[in-house]
Every structure is written in C-alpha cells, then in structure tokens.
Image (tube, rainbow, N blue to C red; front, side, top):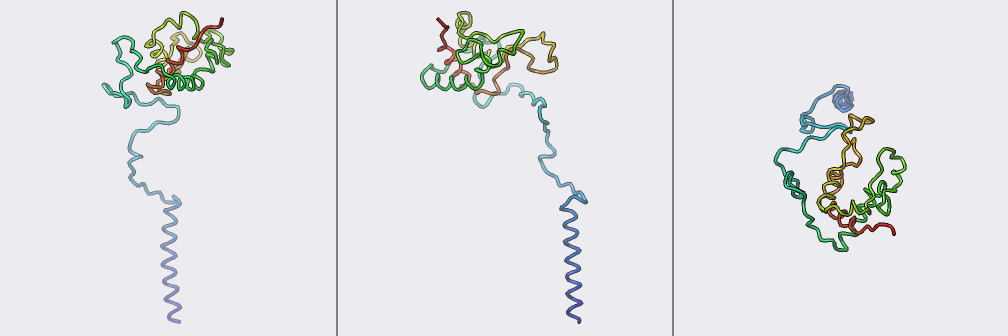
Amino acid sequence: MRLFKQLVVVFAALGVLVAALMTFSFDVIKIDWVVFMEIQESFDDQEEPRPVPAQSIPVEGAAYLPGMGEPTNPVPADDVSITRGAELYAIHCQMCHGLDGRGTGTIAAFLVKKKPADLTSDVVQAKSDGSWFLTISNGISNPNNSLFPDVEFSGQMPALNENLTVRERWDVVNYLRTLKPAE
C-alpha cells in the first residue's frame, strides 16, 4: 500500500509538470523570448524596400556613375551573350515588345495611350548601347500618369535593374542589336 501511495505522488508530480509545460507550449501563457529577428526592422509584403545606403556599391560592381555620361558596353557581343540576351528578352521584354521586337506583344493590345517602342526602327537602333542600358535599368517614366499616381511605377516601361544583373542587362542590349526591321 505504501508503494502505491508513492507511485501516485510521483505520477501526480509528473502530471503537474507536464501540464505546466504544455500550458507554455500552446501559448496559453505567452512568454516572450528575445529573438534577434524580432528586434530588427522588417517590411511587409508590397512595402517599399529600404533605400540604398549613401556611397554604397552593389556586390556586382557599379553599373554606371551618375553624371558621368552613358556607360560603355563592357560585354562583347559573342554568341553566348546574344543567346543569353535572347532568353532574358523572352522572359522580361517579349510580352510588350513582341517576339520580333516591333512592339506587337500580347500586352501591347491593351496599352491605349502609349504603345511599346518598335525596337527594330532606325530611331531606336541609332541609340547607343549605353542609352539602351540606362533605359533597361531605369525604365521610362511618365510623370503625367493620373491612373496610378501613388504607384512608384507609373511609367511607360518598368525599371528592370532589380530583375536583371548588370551583365544580364548588357546581354539584352547585345541581343537587341541583332533585331532587324521587317522588309
């Protein structure tokens, strides 16, 4: 009988301990543990990212220096660059500019006020590689956009500097040079 009473006391103590642990594990009583992720700044979905620190240089190097004119193309227009540029064009540009670059992509039909540029035209092909690079990097803004005045991209072409690395943007430029006008 004495052994039975000792077992009851031991199991009762274990039961109380397990009940206390389960209470804390199911957030019945919330205990805040200090976690470094909780004390740093964070951003919600679709919230503006933090600005780039002053005088910082991207990991891949500076794409161009503002105020120093257009950059020069450091990537040779070889088969590797043109092939990679064609793949990137198909992913990021073809929906507006079309398969052949004439501005006849699937989205172009829905753009009423300003159609995508014909990348095969003499005017566009006459632009320098640096001009094309800056256009791909920074996009083309439209300050008179009344449809989405609060949206950062309120322009005619979005900036692709966050989608494409510096090398990939130069590959797209090299591919665009291969587009020829229709005869």
